[in-house]
Length: 122
Image (tube, rainbow, N blue to C red; front, side, top):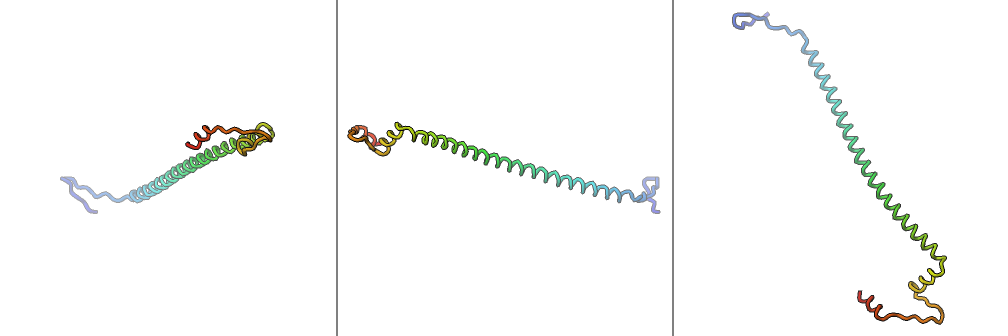
């Protein structure tokens, strides 16, 4: 064995007892476990963010569809009222006069010339 001199005291070099190799294996295992855990955590966070984005998009789509349903319901109500009015003789007469320009037999219609000029100027 080699002896080294330090000051006046001679020391023997320490023998490699073989403990560093298992420590290295333990450190490599620990590093592998930490790396695997980190990859899992990163994947989990990515998956959660992706799910939140998808959920947000679906909520926007639901809101848009609910608005469309609301508009369709409003239109349905309007059309139902118009359908109900088709059975009302007064409504039918008003539509015939205003939209179709019809008159009763022997009826004279007076047109306000000032009103028609004002409407044509707009």
